Length: 241
Image (cartoon, rainbow, N blue to C red; front, side, top):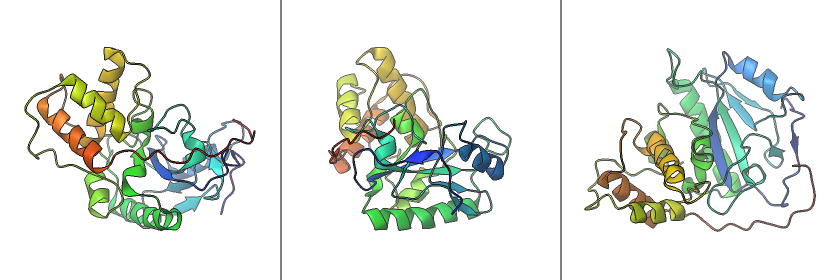
């Protein structure tokens, strides 16, 4: 294992209970590894997976990597202490080659299955950076194949072609989004629009415009089937931020 210095003890003394997926937005996997190992960068992740499927571990699974930053998923606000972070080498959605190659996806599935089995992490707790930091982050982006992961039991998915609710009710969408795990920065319409964008980025990446009935229907089904777990937050013991 190539050790990154940018890590520490999980603040609450607990094993990881979630996974966060990212893309590197850098030219090469090696460039990302070098940055994640640079003490001046003050960022890291547990794993980097290159386009050819090469997996490089930078932080031990039991340690706290610095990959998630500010944000929240469900009742967890210190996501770094609760999660394992995977960085996928990818330039991002604005590049000419935004897709995630087969070798990379196969490696991710293999490593995800191992991690989730080892730490008993349920599929609904495998999320994107964009889910826990709506409006601030968009990775792993609109080209990532979440449905594929769900078919392997490694994440969750509701088919967008499923029957929708009767109407685009804002209150129903917001309540369901909250119970699934999304958290706006406040209760303003603007913050909930950001949550809608984050939800669509993952579950309806080609859709834009105002909230519609299909958004509501999918979100309700997510909340009903996979309500966000109120995990043990542990007891803080005063390690670094």
